[in-house]
Length: 87
Image (cartoon, rainbow, N blue to C red; front, side, top):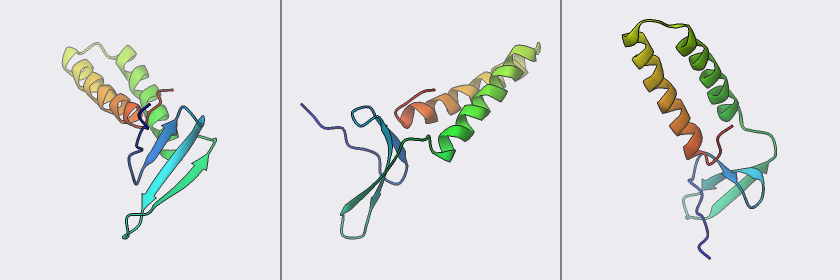
């Protein structure tokens, strides 16, 4: 079974540990791990941004504005997916 390597210098969701993991690599290449159960602030902010964008998307009737909001929503969603968990 292949072990998933977490992306360094950012929060990642560990399905196995069911916790958030922050991996920091020092100058010698040694990895340091920080675990927490609560979502990191970055994830909370992305979740709130998605909520706001979804509300705007439902309210807008302008096709150009709709496309702009939708593209921003996709970018936020991708950042969340990169963290390993979508809320």
